[in-house]
Length: 116
Image (cartoon, rainbow, N blue to C red; front, side):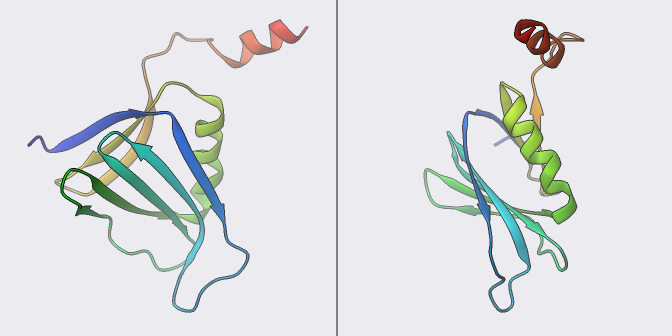
């Protein structure tokens, strides 16, 4: 097994909580469907647990805890970029999402030109 996972994904679900459950510090969450399982991203305003992976046999659950102020940046990337890849480093339980290599100036400017 390699020390990291990187998989392309195309579907996600967003959760905005109306009130906190006792003992829970999650304000928002994003669930990402992956070929190898599911990533659960919890955006927390206070205490954050350590990232961890739960092995469910042929599938895995990646539980990732992030600062609540980073939520808007994650949503922006999910809404506006493609393709996207989920990265999880097993040695340090590090997680991020990334785009593929893209040419400079691609995307937003092209979209604005198409509107005009």
